[in-house]
Image 1: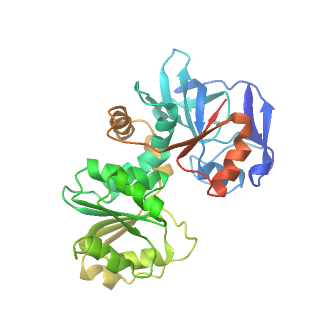
Image 2: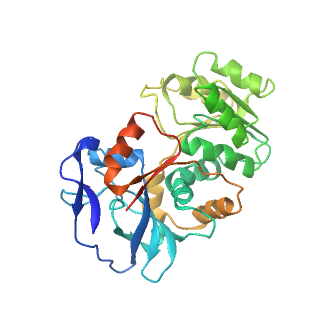
Image 3: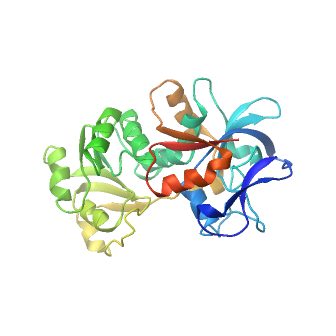
Amino acid sequence: MRAMQYERFGGPEVLREADVPDPVAGPGESLVEVAAAGVNFGDIKQIAGEHTEGPYAPKGPLPRIPGMEVVGRTADGRRVLGYVAQGGYAAKTVVADRDLVALPDGVSPGEALALLVQGLTAWHLLRSVARIRPGESVVVHAAAGGTGSLAVQLAREFGAGRIIATASSDEKRAFALELGADEAIDGGAEGYRERVLDANHGHPVDIILDAIGGPVLDAALDALGYLGRLVTYGASSRQTAAGIDPGRLAVDSITVAGFWLIPLIAAHGAGGPALEELLDLAARRRLRPLVGAAYDLGRARDAHEDLLARRTKGKLILSP
């Protein structure tokens, strides 16, 4: 079968097209004929050799086939969405049954792939970690991105009273407003607290979802109110946040929590009610996953280069 693989660790240049044997499903697994594979920063980390530990880390010797998200059909004809630790950049792959979910009519491959890692992350940030309650105010950093754009929409779906989006440009802030944010502001650390409070009618906020880290995370703590929750799930700024004084948290009973989806998938599988809810919302057009460019499988290197250069918008997909 056709596949993209890497024989050594490195950047996009190490990806090579190859003809490899078809995989064989074992007990509790399904062979999926891949219609589309999702492209993630996690794939780039895989081929760079950064994902080396944990139950869902790639296994076995090089060469390996990267890719974590696939849409396709099982041998019995079911249209499915699935998560794999590796092997998605291929015409066929094997997926554990607990990591598969049926794909409803009306949801395109690109939309479904946007809902797997990014959608589940946004769902768990709000439901499992922040435990959002109706009427609460939510700040979503990087709200025009894959996870942020879904978090804005899910916050509205889950009954948020006020949603404040942050983004780095006028265009991105306008997009966040289209998605349902009540206000969209610059997310820079300087003057952060003042802008957030002003966007929330002068009041501190209940929940902040942060994927930026560094000085922005430090500033965000000062914008939280009593029993406020800050959830960190990334550090795109590549800057280190200051140490947090426990006394600072105790004064207003603030919670700071972290979240990473992959250990949760390793423990419980990707399939289940959360992903089914996301797909149902998309099928009923209550959720708008952001779909970007589609590439032929043989152009996976181009997709990685475009993603690294920030030339893309929305979920990138590969078509075998």
